[in-house]
Image (cartoon, rainbow, N blue to C red):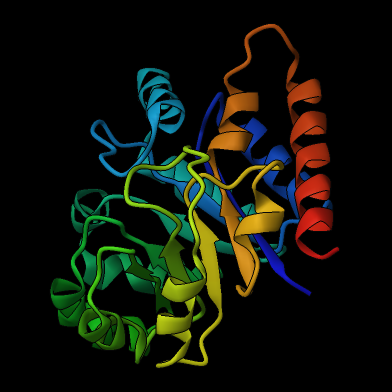
Length: 246
């Protein structure tokens, strides 16, 4: 069974909604939740996620909201935190990772933390049984790919194209995928530009997909109720889960 990872922006439009949505997604095909930590300059994200980040911050998102959300959701649905390093660094990594473990969070995704710098925290992640998700991109050399994936934990975030999230740009991922799988048995999940139209194609040869902008597009709709947003997100997750497994 191929896996579906869903990214949602924490605290948008509000904390209680994020909790309700997350639990509903966990019952409708989502295997792992990425709780995005709102940040003022999300450089790896497309316009939809950037807009949701800014709106969450305008509405007063605080890091403690992420902790409150995770306390309820993480024991029930496999949970990761996705954010830019400054957000985590400000919380003191030596205190944050034990807290994350206590909340049943299973790992972090930090797109702006280079592999070399991430090694400084590898022992801390191990001590707390937390995964620090590794990224690989089509621009990486074979040598670089080997270095990054050889000790990757949980899954490898394979960037589906050289750009930012939310694009449906088509490309042949098979040679890139083969170069990753040559050096690791860790599952490879395809992210960036995955939606219900592209998921079936992008998951070929991979172990799962990561979907963000397609969910955030629903959350940003201003003409539907919270209940309708949850219903539409759950429908989307069921469609994508079916697409990648049939």
